[in-house]
Image (cartoon, rainbow, N blue to C red; front, side):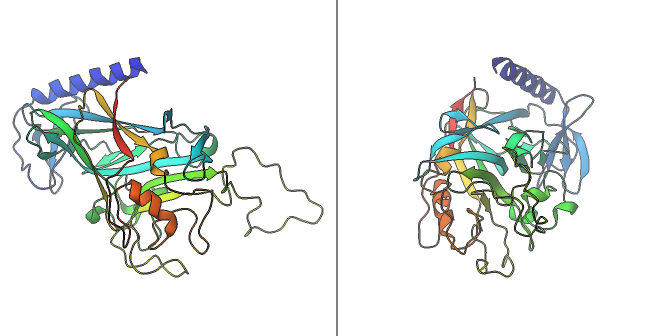
Length: 349
């Protein structure tokens, strides 16, 4: 692990040095400009609104890499691991997926001002001011995911001294619409998109729990087996469970309804994105810790409220969402928001 962080630190120094040596830009750097890295020189190359290339990056511009670590209390998040003592029922959980969108990342300067970070567009994980973090590896119970993982966000800020960080959990409203098939990566993953009328799952945590295990086979909708034919042997980690325990899908979109159904009232359960502020954070020495034990601390993941979707899927009025909403600092109807408890500062190892 120390060798990995050493390699990442060295790469950050190289990128910072390259950005500092580039000539001043000639394009407009206002509005929705973003930054990418020239594949040949690894210098920062700005891209202005309208996708018009500008010259290389601003002299002295700093490239920063923010590292994220997912944990369940004191244990690292891993596909295939089980975690006991979760939530008010002390359940044991088995994660199947963990992905989340971050946006509007900013570093906090010594005067307490939030300075927006221009993300490096890499054609895969970062687009405009949106970044995707992916902690599942497509193995074992996470077989429905992808082999690739991503635990960093990289972007540029003007030269200066910074002591904190801010970011939003979610996708900005202008990008939180439309069909994933028409969007740029990482906004083109159908696993992270809601059904019509659209929008994205800002946080996707799927898990089996003690009280909400995998479904039985075959699924209820499947044709029955011929008489006298035994069901197939189910592996320990079925790749296509009929039911997948207690999912936590936090999302919003400025939608009007989720379509017909007993649990689809007008509006969205979570129209607002959670804004996270860590006042003391050093990009060179710290990591952002995402603690799933804290996320689920006040939830009962062994019971699903009858007449509602499985787990918490951001449906308006679903009591199974109250706990996770509170931990993220999102207020529920009639309940004021409180400080979030899921994200905290850790030390690089």
